[in-house]
Length: 439
Image (cartoon, rainbow, N blue to C red; front, side, top):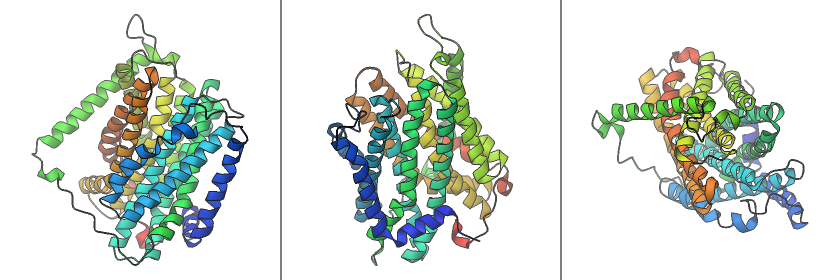
């Protein structure tokens, strides 16, 4: 069977690493040229402003250094720094260029750049963890690169194309006020997806291909099985209670003011844009995995996540700015969809391998957490620092978003999604005819 587009692109990039890296550096230099001519409009006061962005690199690099210097080799830290720097710089330059045609506020640019860093870290850590597994299985560097391309590359293409399609649909059908945000995040997602399929394999091949093996990953000191039996069900019950309460409260606040001085969230939400985003993401999941159960679970959980996020946002931010609800919906669903695709990939692999439902959920979540947990840590640190450096409604929104992202990742993605996705067993997944190492 002919390899997919993601596999062919990733393998070609790994085989022509020097040319790909050089092309990306030239691309970044070309996109930065308008800035030297004074053509930037978005940069003043936003994270794309070099004076502001320079203060952010230590914040982004610090958690990545902690994550990669302990379980991984030091070379991975170099790859991560190069990858995130190139992707973020290219995204900021393109946003400045696009802002000449689509008027964007600094807040819109900040949200898009935070999303692109989050998504890039997810792509990067997933590829690193998959490469470690491939090398631990006895594969050489060339074989490991192909395995990573067939898994991490396909996941990046599926998640990136699904999010891009949904954002494009929102930009076309949503309200005029939503077009700048959807366009900015769309540009950022496209850059990160293309980079994950080309630049990341090239950096991995150029920097990480060496006869020296990666150091073994240290075993976890604390395992779920070591905890008392009542801890796990109590944590699950608490998470579901918090999520359910927030979702009910958020659904009530969408149509009801809730207090004399408040107004309904429906006044600040673009209903057509939100529904379009949810439906297109569900359809993209259906196209990718070809099973209605998985697509329906994606649609329902994304809807619950939006309602719960809005409920938590109303409780944590007072007074609530008019722009906050729609920004939260986009900022929440875009990284969550990338994490969801990676987790679905793991669930599909373990289910087709013949595992029981219980073992599938446990094994897939454990294997996905090494990458997803690191990405969550980086995301939370960025939003917290951004909140602490801002003032007013932006500060409260950033701090609330950090808490909402934690709740969404732990409860919706790692608790509810796996259990719904494996309900149908093997009938939920279509089998790819290809090499046995496609897992």
